[in-house]
Length: 179
Image (tube, rainbow, N blue to C red; front, side, top):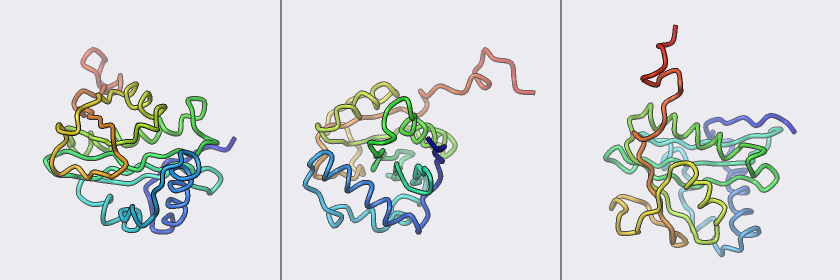
């Protein structure tokens, strides 16, 4: 297996990102959603890569195999959206989802974000476990900020408090300062 690179989205990635996401949504999970119902995917730089937001892709052998979008929704809050990993590189043995999430958490801390929210569908049961394992807490839809961008397919919602993220051991209070 080739090494998977996590990098920021560039305009040249647009068609491949759409293909990965639609394949997972429609063919793998049977969700009746089109590209037209997801206009954010046509304007990733404007929608995600502005303010404190960002969009990352996971690339293996030149092919995009994963995505993660972070939408700045104001008040030092963001929405995690479009986190998808192709079936061939999904799971802990590959670590693609964990690496995408780690990149997002690092960015969130550096950008001064305090909370990250996400919405997902009931069908993504493995994703629910993944988010919960990584510090996301399920919340009611009514607990979302008004600025949260709801999707019609969202039925389950989570929040992560960024300030509760663990710092690297080299920065923890009990560790000696780096040399």
